[in-house]
Structure formats: C-alpha cells, structure tokens
Length: 287
Image 1: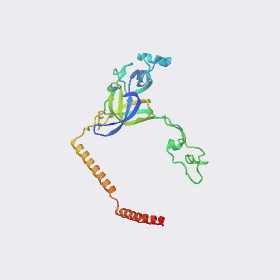
Image 2: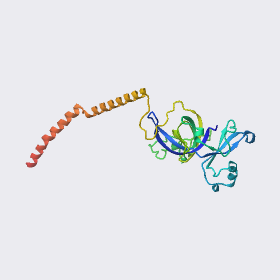
Image 3: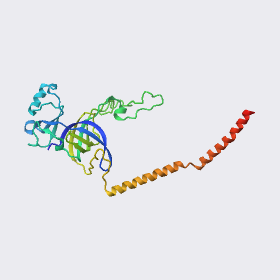
Image 4: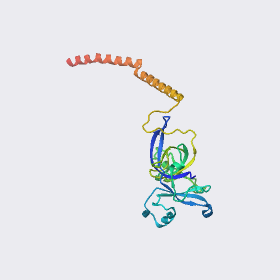
C-alpha cells in the first residue's frame, strides 16, 4: 500500500497526553488527495505515483494540465501535484482517479517523516544566515559589528574557496523532519495531529511519509478531560514529588519570613534615634 500522502500545515497548538505530559501538536490537513497518474518501469523507466492535493476550478488551469488530468476524470483540478517514487509496483491496490483516505494509510502511533519548504528570509547577512559572531564593537570599529571579516588568503591561492559562508538568500529550502509521531486522526475532516513541529508557513505544502511504529506511544487526552490515567506506581511517585515540592515551598517561605538578627538590631536602633531626634528639633524651632 502507498505510504505517502500530501497535506498542508494548518496550525500549531499544545495538548496533553493521557499520562499528563504537555506536548506540541501540529494540525495537518491531509485531504482530499487523488491519484492522478501511475508510472510504470516499462513505459517510463521507474515506478511512481502522481498524487494531487486540494481542489480548484478547471477554468484556473491551462490546457496542457487539463489534458494531463483528463485520464483521472476529476471534476476539479488539484491545487498541488507531486510524484512519489516507489521501489516496486503497487499492482491493483490503487487506480487512477481514486481518492486516498488518511485512515487507510496512517494509524495513531505511526512514526513519520514530514518534508516541507522552510520560510524564506530574503537576502541576509552572515550573522543571521550562518550565526557569525561579528567583529569587535570598540577601538574605532563601529562599522564592523556584523561584517564577515576576511574571506580568504592573499596571492596564494588568490581566490575565494568554493562553499565559503557569505551573505545571501536564507530560508526557502526543502527540509525533512524525521522521528515525528501521529497522535490522532480526524477521519471526517481528513486531518492529522502530529507530535512536534514541521517546516514551512501556514497553508504550506507538506509531504508525509510513514517510516515505522513508535515503541512507547501515549495517546492524547480527550479535550475537557482532567483525570490522568496512570498506574498505582506512577500515582505514588507523583504524590511523593508533590509533597516534596510543597515542603520545599514551605521551607523557602519560612526563611524569607524570618529576618536576620543583625537586621532586627539595626532597625531597632534606627527607630530609637528617630524618636530622640524629633523632640530636639522641635525645641530648636521653639527657641
């Protein structure tokens, strides 16, 4: 079966698992996805499946793409088209024009790889692009604070080596994040809830590929539910930690409430001095 699907990044939020752990969760819209074309090794030289995500009007696309989509018999044109390479043919498992469902490919607890395109930062300097420290801020070098410094040698070799880190465009690169976990699947809305963060901006295209299973998977807690599902050992350990934290807070409060003896003596002496000085000043005024 096909192990890859397309989607777009919707939002990043936080949720709690059933053991009470707070985790970052990314919501991905992974449908509708359609099979547009199936490539064969005899005809094309390799095995692949062309998948389309999203929907837009046929009037918004050009005639060559309309002819390409004619074989899939789709009512609307896909918003994104991507080709997924395969090691071996899928046979009769999928057909052209078939709609791919998220629940048929993924299950909660699956480990996945998400590929996306990072946010473009434009033309940036070496400090932002490569993390350079910059030049000194003193001794009359006020204009060298974010400068790259020397970029090579002199007469030998008399050129700048290839791969030298210099200013240029940053971001807008293809990035793959591995080791992410599917926490939940919304079959009705064709959405995935993924533990972790994925590259790209909101509504950016993502390619989600299944890589395996997570060994220690803990499902998400239901929204609005406050009870933590835990074993007796976990409960006793949690209560012990809570008691230790309370005792530490009480001990810290007692030390703050008790002033030092030297400070008490100074405050008493200052009060006595003030009481002695006040009547003397009044007598001088009367005199």
